[in-house]
Length: 337
Image 1 (cartoon, rainbow, N blue to C red):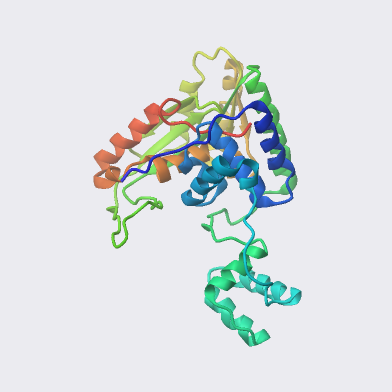
Image 2 (cartoon, rainbow, N blue to C red):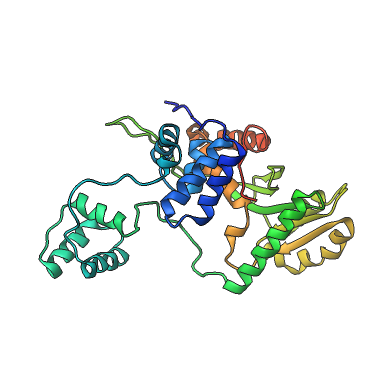
């Protein structure tokens, strides 16, 4: 069942300016988040895309859009909750917050420990409401690298990329982001709307792997190369050689420091590429957030790839290549400047 999209009515410059001010300056995180969602919706970003960007459910985004249509700026604030004051003291709330950090997935465990230490009983719904009152929310746990980037190196790289983005916007150069991704018949299982009592099932099996090497810009220019066999340094070099052909304006490529991108063979080509106008910039270790093409891969796997793609490896290749061919046209992402 397809669920129709909806968007806020077009916004004038003054309203957008006020919303952007809330995004930057509001003391309440929920107001900042909702204001950002309204701006994105005014740019015709879909509810599904906004949900991923804001890291909340689709229903929440839909409700925010409805509230904006009815109440305008007043719809950005949390509704006042009826009822008396919380039964927990300040120190007991701190205890609950600490319990949530220790057992973030188990409300039952929090309820039991809270009773043991305070003698106070709370229902599951009351615990959830109290958790929200201290700034916590239930959301998907993100996978991340085992190690964190060096803070100074990360900031330096981010500042440099921000400056390159400005130069790209001013057409002084072309800024591209490069990465590899693989697709096989073990699907990345997404959320989906399902009828009560029914469950959507996606076939899963071992298969060959379709490897994609892609270059992406902030305005959704995209070039890709697909391979049905393993990718090594020689293939990456061949792809960069092809990408370095017929350059009319300086191209800066942002990529991670995977071994294929830092091998002696790859490094030996740097001078040759720079002579053609292709400049390589490596990200610091453990910094995938700085590579916007990672967002593209997530959209393909979680949002754009249909369930029918997993019927066979042949069908998977057809569906992936169809999406790749339409990036920038049918499939677009609104990136922050």
